[in-house]
Every structure is written in structure tokens, then in C-alpha cells.
Length: 334
Image (cartoon, rainbow, N blue to C red; front, side, top):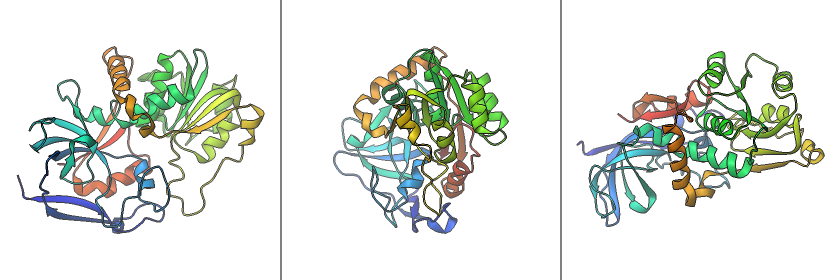
């Protein structure tokens, strides 16, 4: 084992898309651990849209990453030293490990995972934060009923793909919105969506009227902006709008574009509610168990897009915002 710990630190708050000059890639000594901690070698990192919000200063659901701090990231790693009986050397764990090779972390901040039950990257996608977000966001907040029409934006992404598949399991008519012919074909042919709309080549409002002739009961939004506006114009009475993310707005250099069609909520007595995965932390285990069963039954499929190399983090993050990933974007550290 090297005695150096490669790290990616945030050194500037980005304006618009993050630039290479916003990061410092350097080495530090591998940390020593205290009682109640383990030393983890980081294997895989989750690359998520939420990272862009974590870089901004200001009030949010979680404190921003400080200037000069290691960039926050969820990850999977292997325990190489332990000072707590809950973990042994060789155990694998999931937690907020940061964009670095090694981390000393309290065991209370980790969840043990079994590499024999599922490939490790799956614990960062369908069995991890994206899958849990989709599970609770759809079922608890969206509350879909059999026969209803569910529309999902960012449908080929890690969260959206899970949402659409669970909606199908619950007997809904599911329409996905994604960018590009290949992603739309994947939604229908492999994941079982009823139809998909390519926002890059189709008129979204017109396509929604075609694919949702009775209107939209549940909208799970990962995109925001014009997509949210187009859907609001076509919601049904008592519709539920789940706001999970707004990736179209994260790198704006001007004010965020809010929904101009929001009065549709009033007319239709509809509800629009934001979700954050941490709100359901107490029930993560039950959700993962249910989704694991669906995976075993072939009802829930997962796709991971894996890039390699810690030093490539700045460019891999940009792939996310350019829509170049196909499935859950993950960085293999080495």
C-alpha cells in the first residue's frame, strides 16, 4: 500500500459548468484512525447531479463543500484497518467517502454491504442512493395507483430508470422522457416503459399529448425548466408532481427558471412536493430488500456506466451534465 492518499479538492465555487481550475488534485498522507473508526480504501464513487448543488454556497438541505475540502461523494470501499468490532478487515462498506483514495471514517457513518450478494457498483445505483430516492419518491410522495399515467423526466438516468420500472410493477402506464434515440429505445425495449419521448428531436408538449391522451397523474421530475412547464400544462385533477432534481438548471449563470404554468396546480388541485433521500433514512433497509427481491425476480433492471481513474473526476462529472452517461455514472478509483 502506498503511503500517499490522492484527493480531489474544491478550490473555487464554479460559475456555470465546473472548470478544471475549480479543482486541485494532490496527495496527502493516509489518515490514521481512532477508536470507533475504520480506514477504507475507496473502490468506486457515485457521480451524482446533486454534487453541483453541494459546490454552491448558501442554504440547502446539506452544508456546502468548503473551499479547500475534499469533494463530497458517496462511495463503496473495502476496510483495510479497523478499530471497531462492527467491521473487520476485508468488509465492504457504503458511505460518504469523498473523492479520494483512502478515508478514516466513523463506523456509524457506514453501511456494510455484501459483495457476494450483488456486484459492488449496484450498491451505488439501484441498491444505493439513486434507487432508494426513486423508491420513496415515487411510492411515498407520488403515490401512484394502478392504471394511472406516470411520466418520468431524466428517465434513462439512475433515478428515473428505477422510478419507471417501479411504476410498471405497480400497474401504471409509464412514459419516459430522455435524450437520444438509443436511450429511448432502452427505456421501452429493455426496461418495459410503455413509450418514450426524445426531447432532443420531438416537440415535448405535442408528444405528451400523444402518449398521455388522458393527461398525467404523476410526474417524477429530475430535469426542471421547460420540461416541468410542459408537463404542468397537461396534468390531471389531483395530480402529484415529485420534484427530485432540476439538472437543466444546475449550471445556470442566470436565475433559475421557475414554472410559469404553476397555476395548473390550482386549477387541478394538484400537489407539487420536493424530496430528499435522507428523509427516509430509517427505512433504507426495507426498500433495499424489496428492490433486491425485484432484481432477483427480473422485474427491476440496472445499468451502470463506469469510468476509471480518480484523476479523471473533473471530466467525468462534466459527462453527467452533458448527458453523455448511459445509466448510473460511477467512477472506479483505480
